[in-house]
Length: 248
Image (cartoon, rainbow, N blue to C red; front, side, top):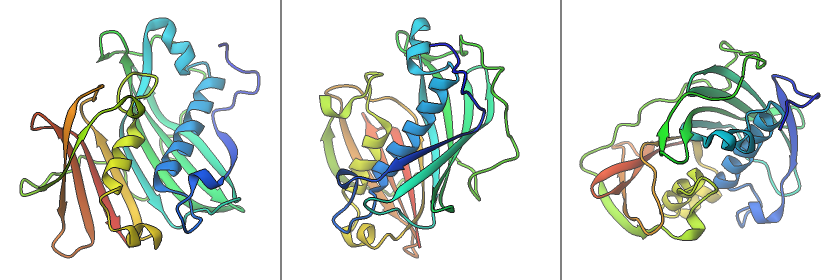
């Protein structure tokens, strides 16, 4: 698709929280928070001419490599949230995108994401084949207090669940959708901590893609002071994903 005449290097988009996106207490699920952020990023890439549809002409897609989310509060059912997004950096095969979520003008979520251009045929990263110079970059305008990082995995981690990848776990790029990894891990967190909105921030590293029928093991390791927890997902004893939760 061509670049939209309404294109702007900063996009603000409204979303209304519906009941399917909420936990039993009426507040937005952390997984659906990530979905809204990702859909906003996709909307910005679409009007800017670098969407999945545009990139598929060259057998390319954006895939998420790292993500950090800092949360002050969660929106609730029927809230209208505004998500604002812009790009910090974009060159060759890599991009860093910032996102913020607001309710009634108050910022409640900040997010930093790291994306890579991925060839959907060779399953390898490569340089973006489309022009992107029309995007103004904002390297100093950060959405989070801390940037994303490499998550250290404790070798004394405990295996807590075994999982088979099903068709429902896959997305349009034909690998496990990034939100599914988060969902698998959060299913093994104390439900009260989720319902009480005790997650202060979380960070995710995506290292290797998973495909249909893959067999994986989910591991967990907690900090000694109980201030954080780390989950990892491995296939054939090789880590594919890591999640670090920081509690309030």
